[in-house]
Length: 99
Length: 134
Image (cartoon, rainbow over all chains, first blue to last red; front, side, top):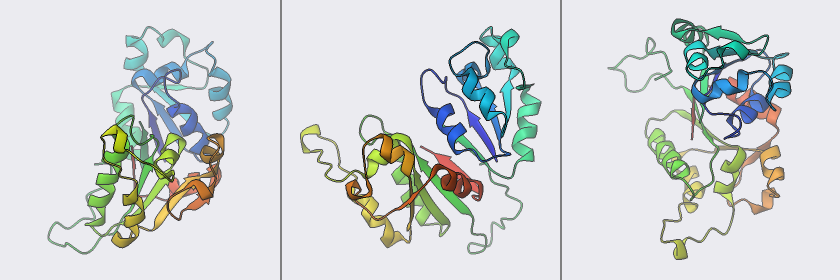
């Protein structure tokens, strides 16, 4: 399953709930304000790092760049472009967008 | 939308039954999400799909007993959850952790539901064809 989170983890609990309810082996794609969850030095870093033991985490490059945080992506997070976004959707049998 | 159309024959109105889960994560009156979500659930019933509802985070407040919106001037749509059974929508799952964090127990809910752990909810989500969040 692919989970997509587009809200900042400091504004909403979408990422937190996603990480709680995503099953081991699932993928999480961070887009829009969700990409702040993939950055180093924040208060959610430890939680996201911990989640990466069971989940594959991706972040959309265009959204990281737009927000000036492309140079501080957490180790282990895979940055994808729009083509990669499409591939992720196509490669998973189902997905959930967390509002 | 996110579902493959290759198995769907437009001339065949019976046919494919998919597992749809509607995930409710918002409290009922502060935003329009909960009511809109419920409307979509009712619409989905007309298509005879395998529908289930999940209540997570503030979504559990949608099922709180005793809602009274008279003074608010908004429609109290909470009785509708009890009517879902009449539309053959009988799978209502509430995440225990979300309920407990908010100080709620099963007795506080206005409809019969299955209380599940986060892990059980994760299993339910993975087995769906389509998951739609509100």
